[in-house]
Image 1: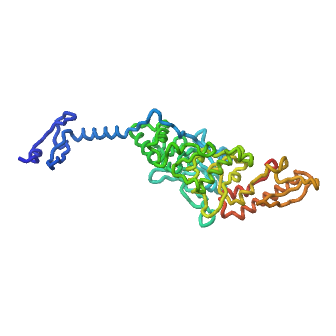
Image 2: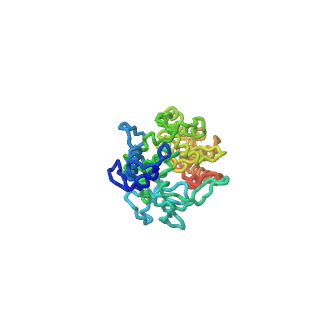
Image 3: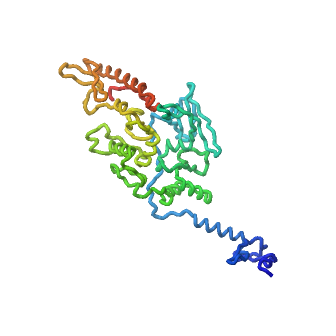
Length: 429
């Protein structure tokens, strides 16, 4: 009788793992070295259980006791000028800490740290309902200011709530790779900023798998995943985090071109803020800082590539959007032509104690009002008092800024154009 016939006549078999007597169809048939068929000694159930235990042990997430936590969980500081006073528009907050901040690149829109959006239209502030895509992600239909066909225009776009909340409220340690967002408890309806974690694909998969098995997605666990080198991008190393610029800026990646325009802009920005010798020459930059996100060059490069207009020589300006601003950040700076950037230099170093735009002419015994523009002096007249000279300067300079805004309107982001049209010169500037 052949082996096959013997196998076909078997009705039961004892499992070597669990010891049960089971029908032969509960065992997996395989072929031997000489293609002779036979049943495995353990049943399919035990085989599956063994394989599952093996894979779970193999894929179990463990961390070394001396895991170095280089990346912490931090949140962005929001300028008060961006906040909307919802108490005046009868919007009930979802929590005592809910705030709505202006979305700088969108038309008349404010986003809350709970993922809600208010839009101003037809003379009213309206709380938008939003829509959900096929994956259950909430998005809003808004108009975004974009550079298109040689000028700045508004285009209709979908703003995804989770992504926007991360962008506006959370310090993202790796904007180039952290394109995935983990919601605490895997709840996509939860858009509260403290419950959102920007992760790369490897980190996201580890967190999701661990949560599905254990129900654990604590911040402590996620931070360990974020700091474990096994789940970092291939171009990352410990050396990437070492400060190489002004004792505070680091590159964030091994693949960095230190001769690129974006790197040189980053270098100059850090020097203006943190180089003491530079402050001796340009004291107006004393006290300026770079936001935490941009201390990482790789993060700055992402913003730079998204906002730089190809073929144009532009300055990185921090003074126009928010008067008196001292922080370089994605929310407070903009690229503008050099001629626009020079309009907002205040010349405190050379004018002494006199108001902006005022000089005392000893030969005439009068105060002279004049405006400096592109190294040229525009004389505006002589006056008996510094106050009257300043009044003339204020009137002329504000008109001049508005005229320049209109002249360069097509190549200025709308947020810059609006700030220039509303700009006010004060005597204590």
